[in-house]
Image 1 (cartoon, rainbow, N blue to C red):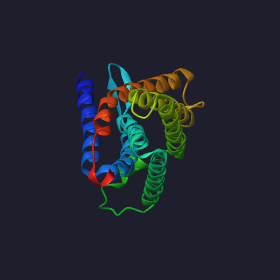
Image 2: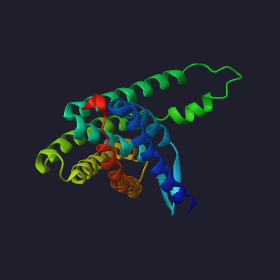
Image 3: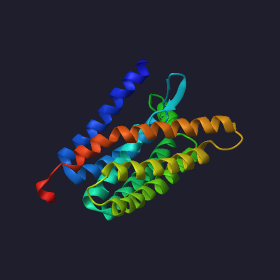
Image 4: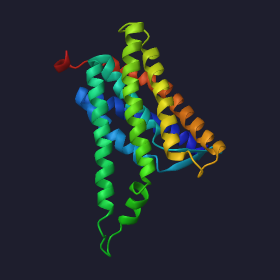
Length: 228
């Protein structure tokens, strides 16, 4: 019960900070959020928690906020801005992965206290890094395309929740499938275990997407003088 209640607060704080970042810094804040969220999500995913007997990884909230950001950019500034943000996020994730892998190869001093902790967080198998980068690249660009298509289908202002939820839920499904296949498929995990990881991960993203929708409505109505 504690993890559930703390998790609800955790989600609300995440999405509230997302709103604050956009309110304070405008479009630049959305780009900043993309860069920070890609790194934080891939750090948090190394921690597992238990909620009612179901083992989950952290990072899903931040990851869903990436879709929220690209959708908001698509809604207010156009498809090209959303695509640019996706490239920025991909570069940030690739840069972080490369630099931290190189940092681990330094021989630590005897007084060093960080090497073991950094190794546990960033020294993951290349397979996990490949899964994360591939899933991000494919699913984020898919989300941008789906959102633009749904916007043409449903109009610019009407059915915002359909565009957001529709594009994100489909893209999240593709993202989860790619990541779980690259990271967990094979003889190391039984099929039943793989299915459980896939289903629970996607369901969490599905719920978080719905929870994030009211925050997106608030963000869409923000006005900035220098962007009028």
